[in-house]
Amino acid sequence: MILRSVKPFVLLQLASITSIISGSMVFILFPWLALDISGSSTVSGLLVTITSIPGLLLSPVMGSIIDRFGRRRTAMWIEYLAAISCFLLPITGWFTEINVVILIALGTLKALVSSGSPSARKSLVPDAADAAHMTLPRANGIHEAVFATGFAIGPAIAAVSITLIGAINAFWIVGAFAVLSGAFTWMIRVHEKHEEHDEESGNPFVYAVQGFKILFNTPAVLIVMSAFMFLAVVYLPTEMVVLPRYFNEIGYPEGLGLIVSTMAICSTFGALLFERLAKRFSYSTIFRGAILGVAFGLLPMSQLPEQWLLLVFGAILGFTWGPLGPLLNTVIQEKIPANKRGRVFALEMAIWSAGPMISMAAVGGAIDNFGVRAVYLTLAILVTVSAIIFGAQKKLNQLNH
Image 1 (spheres, helix red, strand yellow):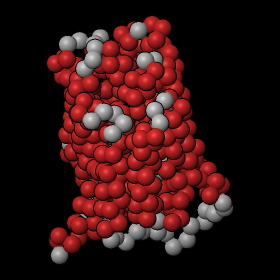
Image 2 (image 1 turned 30 degrees about the horizontal axis):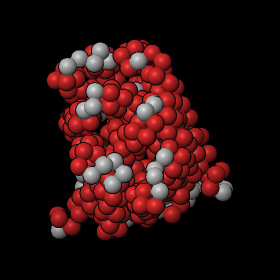
Image 3 (image 1 turned 60 degrees about the horizontal axis):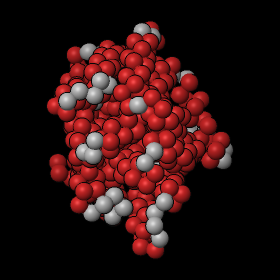
């Protein structure tokens, strides 16, 4: 009986880790391919920017699809479509040479069909946790730890794949993990909670916009979301443009995979610690400590010290980042009705899509003109300043209510 009750939660985590491995491999492979083809960080940043547009535009709409058609069903079909889009890249390589235009087209297609899968699974966490008789802080800590574990494994597999079979052929592996995720999601059997009456209505676009209304009615969550937005704009380019350029210049792809994986592994431990932290500290205190810790790890990393020091400070950054995901998930799940959960989580996804679109090309161009070290230091200073500003907001205390 116990095994039966935890089975949906276990299957959800298996679906999550295979999906994240697939997505985090792309996180490394697309910028690496763009650099190999063009030799330009500007082109690499432009690729990330253009391919982020579909996710930005579709994420709010995808939230309405999740809320209307079901969390499990939406997550499953997204994974199957994502797998097909991944297989298209090596198949195209059989017939013609892959260039930047083809890479952008296939990357855009991948973003188009894969938007919304993490949002659907996060919306399903409370349902699976209820079946397993598990508290939300524990469930979200495990869910985000699994996410971070997948993000640790994916870059490592991608780096090894680049060396052994090439970046293009690595997309066969990416697609295979997406297929596995879809299969695990299909096996989940859990009651998806819905309120009896949902007064919100309209076409999918109007329905999606209502997610913004829900968010603005909870100021503390809005502040946390805004902090995530700024981190997406300023921090994400360090992993997706700055570090790939640095390790590409020194011809050390394994080093890139190692540092990204180290940050992700330590983020796993930070996420698992969230339940204990939540028992000892308020949500606002956890949030403030986490964003300041990220800045503390990033500043020395921006000096590009020896590899072992990069790993040490990357571990600090990852560990302090870890509790942020479970914190945001728990607050949304506690404060937002089940019928509206998908739309709010989809807005979070839109933030992570908007961040790269806004900044990646600009960061790539800045690196081409000013070099990796100058740009990395500037981004680290911006993250530090933003951590201080967001941490000083008094409305964060509403997270504790």
